[in-house]
Length: 123
Picture 1: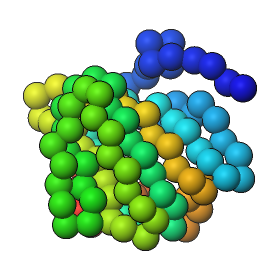
Picture 2 (picture 1 turned 180 degrees about the horizontal axis):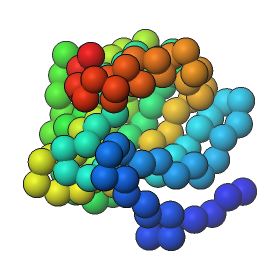
Picture 3 (picture 1 turned 90 degrees about the vertical axis):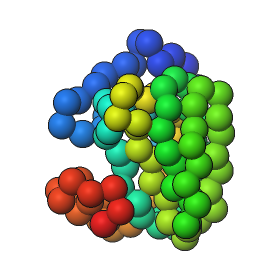
Picture 4 (picture 1 turned 90 degrees about the horizontal axis):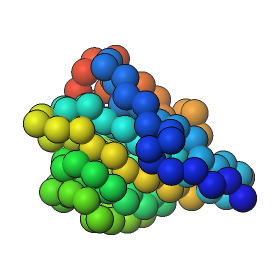
């Protein structure tokens, strides 16, 4: 079983959010997410459930039409096929553990790539 921590894996990218893989199988994917101020994972609706556990910083998690203001120790769980995205506040970094089950497909992440290309949270 993999073991690591946020401090060991921490990497930030000035252009877009950064993820560090922790574990992946056919049934589950676990990554550590690092967001500079204002960075985001664009809204998309893959066929997987996701649990987002915020470790540090503040931001917003979109769940359908609802926006959850999140901070350290908050957990948001979103069911499959529901729009979701995460964005760090403009005034600080955000770190979160993201667990998806099953792992989303490359095709399901096309809206993420498009949103990042266009620089929009809600493509």
